Image 1 (cartoon, rainbow, N blue to C red):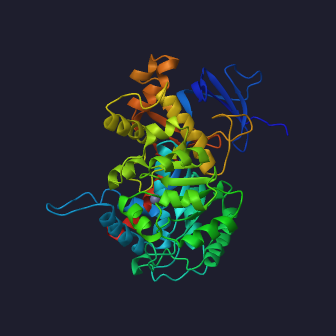
Image 2: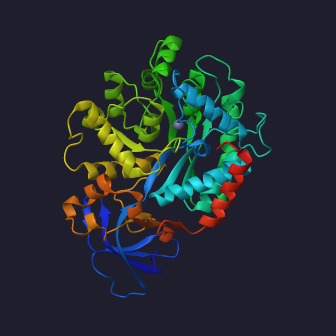
Image 3: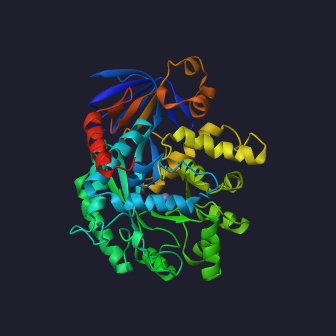
Length: 460
Ligand SMILES: [Zn+2]
């Protein structure tokens, strides 16, 4: 098929896997696919938008619980003499989960997704387990809440992989607690009914796709985890939380005699379709086998830090050529550059060495996030930008003082290690600016709906 360019951009530089293309002319067609990519201007030009910016590929946010954004920053007051950890935070999270209705959930997700776009994420995997109404009864459309997530993504203009989650138990061998009632599918069949209903919703939005999931080993019967994966679709990404908390590892060991990652690696054919969120507490053997499996570890550094989870064994994992990408999970932080810095700095702090990675750390971080992040969404690519692929990018101002006179060699590390969001010019999805100069095209509408939801919730 002949690709017809609708318009052209000219950027000062554009980032590919092997470095910068400077300058970069990008042609896009009506549907936002790249039709032309070169350092030379096209022979026949319809219109060129010249941008004094650096084009980076849009990032993938591979782990989101959208409703938790409504409580971001609300769990940071710790009275003297009390103990606060993940499990007390989880109680606050349940209160939030129990209170939101579909309209409110959609309004929260919409502004969250708009904020993700503003920070450079162009695709989100919504790890979605808030399925039922406030009494725990299924909505007449089983996928009502998933429908709202897709509608939120469409309004905000972000691409979404909806990951409907199977959540069944209170913990290992325990019935669910009343405050988990909105999450529960009792059986594998119930879960697949929900999954099929979620599939129907995809037709509402061209940029929606599907994954499937069990929440964690503590939330689904171990036999049912095997059944779900084995009976599930063979061509979609599979997501689950693993080994986030030491208590979870101890409980799993007490319940079945295996650590969570150990059980997973021994009982399922863990391969590149697996996206294992957190994977914080691993022993040597788990780390080695996991790295060999081709699975992607989804790191959520801001949330893991905020919750006091622990530190993933990144330095060793990367030496073993393990694959990973990032997610913002509870959304306490939404800046991908901060996530990269935390990944690197938490290793430096525990090792007393600066070189977590060999070679160009920024190039490694960005390249790995893009390749494995896209895989976590169910997509593959050879390069960051390719003719025939959608033009999704976020653009840094190339005229700011540190970047203006920085060489090709040091440009990306200057962006990754020094920049804040004020240097971002905007975000392009499918060849169109969605956010420009910090302003989202539908920002006023989105903020008004969010304010209404918060006034109703009265939780802030
Ligand atoms: Zn999570």
